[in-house]
Every structure is written in C-alpha cells, then in structure tokens.
Length: 123
Image (cartoon, rainbow, N blue to C red; front, side, top):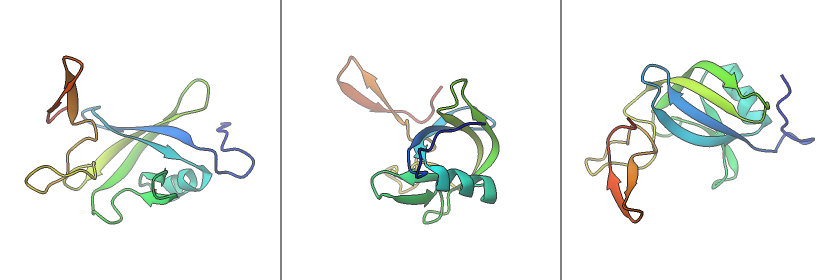
C-alpha cells in the first residue's frame, strides 16, 4: 500500500464514506496520515477537517460515530472508501427541521439545474 500523504504526512486524500449495509454515500471527506492512522487504530472514521484545520473523529461531539467495517483503496492508491456502520441518528452535521441529523450529507438534489430539493435517501 502506497498512499501518498506527502513528505510531512499532511497531504490530503479524499475519502468516500458509504453505509456498509445500504451502500448509500454518506460523506465525502479528506484524510491525512494522522487521521488515517487513527481510523486504523480506533476502528472509527476519522478525517481531517479542512474548515477547522484539525483531526476530526466523526461522532466525537455529536455521538453519531461511524464504525469502520472495511476500508478500500482505489487503483491509483490516491483515494479511500470507508464502508461504515453508523452508530447514532445520522451522519451529516446539518440538521433536519426536527433537529436530527440527516442520514447522508447528500440530502439535496438539484432540479432543473437551479432548484434544491431535500430528499431523505440517496437512492
């Protein structure tokens, strides 16, 4: 395995996160070497938050952890796929009107090239 996190370990690699059972895409995030090693060590999806510029273990503040069932790497060894078992109410930090998290970060679709519609599932 030759993931390239750069000489300092801080180069970011995209991580697609899917529900292990449904295969719904939950999150697209990024990982650096430290976040990847923490994912391997803990068994829970851990990313590098570009907006906060820090390591982010999904669920550490919300309680909505993502237990990693399997990790896959693409053919060019420059992106990852985490197949996870969600442990909580949802996986997105954005909340529905009832205050619960969306199941996936991809909860909106674009209609007619300009209108956003909220949908509950990715299917």
